[in-house]
Image (cartoon, rainbow, N blue to C red; front, side):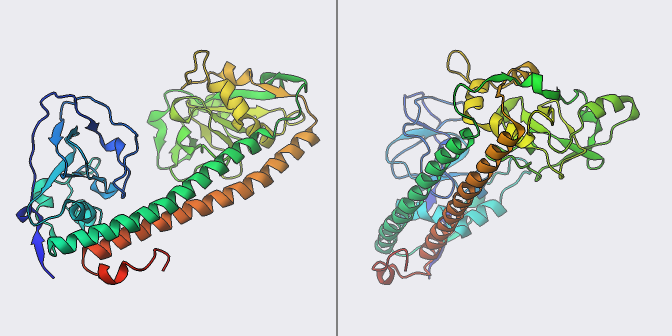
Length: 398
């Protein structure tokens, strides 16, 4: 098995953009681990660090190399300077090089050689020292042809999974809207059926630390679940001078918490034992329903439903709000139903969502398995562990 240093068979031309109207590739346009574009059409623009590339070059991200973002362009263009231009020499087939950059050993080398903590980067000098297996060009082409077919089949399976997930998401939206009763049911402002609608206090940043009471932030909300996100927790140690404010923003079991700023605006959580006693931040609205009028779980589903989300977040001109006010929350129209009816509707939604979420989670696990299979197949093939002449007759499921 012949192993060569990358820089002995590949070059790294750095040519700044000359301002020509060519498609521009940014890191956000690339899917990790697949080399697939996430957009149908690249914009025609020039960034300050734009570099030129041509057909047959391979582009590999030196920023956060663990994301394994690589691309094989089929036409000339420009790209962000965070992408290394790898130009194959006469001994290297471009598709073989492309697949090599997606293999585990290459990505591990790039990640190991990266420097910096928040924005780790590798460089051409470091990547160029990687030693890759280099069979004959004829063998490289056979390998590339095999991987083209195998990864395309895995891609089709993955796309089918993603379509199923999209269908399940649509069913989930309909299930959430089933929390609404029949039309023409009388309604009232949410504010008339609550004990408290408030948000956290400003100026508590100095109190945040690793100890104290739970500090519930917008990061602790979930887009597609009423359960709190407990993977990124913060705590506050509050002085006695803010005792009154702390009591006002303290979470009780059965409260409904709603994101009111930023990307998490409208995301909703139903408070359970895991967050009871914590305090909400200024970016989270705490709604405490009057327990003899409104069931908290039903209300949480109601606010999370597409019907309310559209009314809350949609603007008059078709845009999207990124901030809600407390009056916005108080003005939500709530159907007037008996507690028994509310609890019955919430229980029905519980059952529907449990089934749909189990199916969605299964599809996501299957997508993960496909991604692992894809990278393992690429790695084994471009490192010579698989004889493609013997493997080409077998299907992916073998």
